[in-house]
Length: 225
Image (cartoon, rainbow, N blue to C red; front, side, top):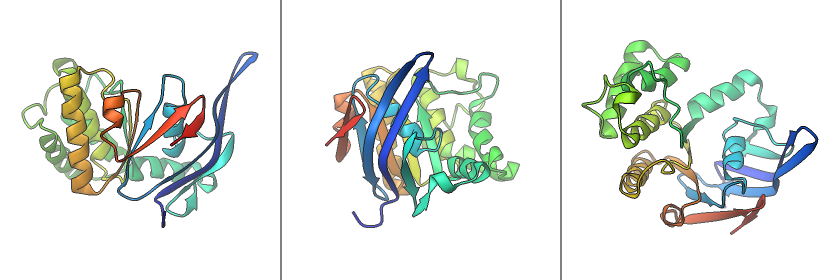
């Protein structure tokens, strides 16, 4: 693979819980090309979410290296790592993580405001991206007034507002029925094609994984292709 967007080499991750140690990743290597659509598949506890968190800079490995655009994440200062997470990576989680007191528009704007994008620009971008995900009539609705599928669409809009080059989705259909989950996957695929965004999805669902041109299976912290 020439000039990958992101490379991971020898990633290990162990969590210590009291006297116990849980080895979640045991030496994972992966290359992700620009514009790639990759599915990480595996049972609960296989290490999918942990791997997403590591390559997105939300957590650090115990050993191994992550290289993004030719630069090692381990060499980033905390401020630069925050900038990387905010501007280069978009996160979509199974649990949505929307602030209940904010409207859909305000939830989406929040990510842009953290990036110090001017308020008027942030609002304009949020309006545009919410319309693109099919919520042009739901700007002023709070999460409790939205269905699960609509909340996930808000979460996707929030992930896209800063125009990231890498979109990481952790079980994005896990809380949705099959029909709504299918709509969310169609939306993610369309947005990836339009924006040439690199998309990595963690899922235990074989049907979701089958939509990706490239699938990696994680079993007991080890990668199988």
